[in-house]
Image 1 (cartoon, rainbow, N blue to C red):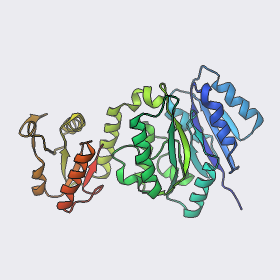
Image 2 (image 1 turned 90 degrees about the vertical axis):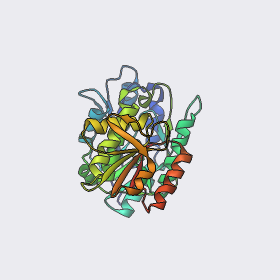
Image 3 (image 1 turned 45 degrees about the horizontal axis):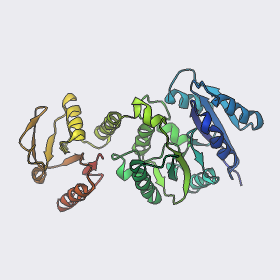
Image 4 (image 1 turned 60 degrees about the vertical axis):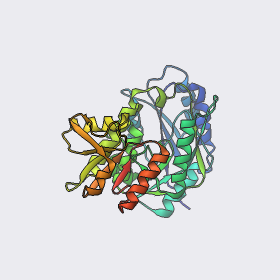
Length: 335
């Protein structure tokens, strides 16, 4: 049986402590028809030496240097030099299950194009995984088990950035790594969603995600909360809001105010609702806050919900159920 070539793209920078474990996990894959395109993003430790030692013994490893700086340009160069029928990503400080490539490649082969292979993930850390990452892992894996990832795409990134695989033609149709928008993994997830790719359910843990103090997602400004809100709003306005819709923002906390301020700056009209009696009736950014019950009289509404409390979210869902409104159609949780 023919095994399609899988290109595994790895940008790396100063990961000498973990890189050997990462590359060994790829070398031990039960699926053997793969290539690694690893791009050095200006490392000043022994990362390049480690990468080249693997390439010297195994021609499937190809090591390149980033002509510029940053993860997006490194990924662009990796993709430019790839030849695979299937495209996948890997983080240089993580490791993968020995069957990861096999499981994903077989899933794509079985279901054909316009699909996205994903897998469950497991965080690990010398210091122990904090509650935030633990909640994210459980939430993400629950979605992955059923393939319903895109139903909650406005909450958080629903595609694990180093654990997906896609047909090359579908990846090109989604724009590959051309956009210069951060967080780049969340942007790519939205473009997969925009093109209508179907997430293929997976109940197996395929990727082991390392957490540590200087991990890029912890230290880079590109992964700060304001970038996430910007990208959510960008795609919401592009993909969800139609000309006949009345836009509603529910919540007047920090995230609600940030979204409201962005909308005001864009000159996009909206209704602003909440259930906080201390805020109802106040004008903020020139918009008056009203009780959420006003939604009963707002026709063709599309609501952005910025309330994070889980119990409050359940109550909000019940309210919309009374109005025969559907989640991810009429209302969208942004946290």
